[in-house]
Image (cartoon, rainbow, N blue to C red; front, side):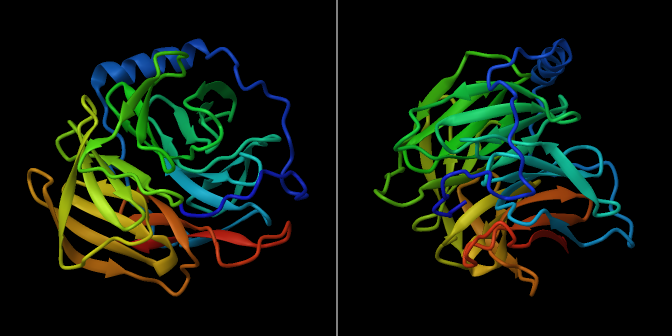
Length: 332
């Protein structure tokens, strides 16, 4: 996500504060679910889905006015979860009908940007101001807040699931952060980025993140100047991925991967670039680009069946409490 991220506000009539504590004890179901997921070493973001959308499912659906969306996640069922930069709220939409409701009302000082839905029934949320949160995907209940860094000088931006950890990017500092899955507290791992990685000042660096096809590494997009890196989650060593067919992935934001096909959402360019990864993830070759007249600065994507669903962040539109927002789907 490449927005300047205004301070959270609750002045929209559609966004209501919540009194949920940011440090609630995780439920037994959440802990057990996370333990099972870790044991199975499930890698999220590979795009597996049990079914494809029917032809009459909507390819566009609204969000509440003033929502300020950036992140989207889809679990096993036909439901999309969409976060709000305004106050950290989370909205759930039924993909079959396009109708939805606020699942988590948010609160003062909260932000929701990147999200991932795990097989453990939990939502992992990047919270920008040094924090990551874990929610129950069914009820929206806030289970735990992880303090990953100081609030200033950091931007916790996106997240992916790899084995027993959720990995978060920091766009303003050269670190990744790994937290235990399953709503457990503690055990945060701070991973400095080394190797080919050069942190640039005063711009967004690390942004979208997914697992490599073999499930042993991570792929991170560097929004400025538009580069892809393979990162070893053990050492933090980052290797720049050579691009063929296009010089950069400028404004690269959310990532999605299906097998060795990588989808890069290039937000302000209003397109998705589609890349073929080689076996060792050393080279990415441009296959095609996807554009759509409904794109209005899309930021992140999530897959259900043969569709990618994207949120329109509308960064070029001045936000007000009545500004409309939506999500759209494109065929892949």
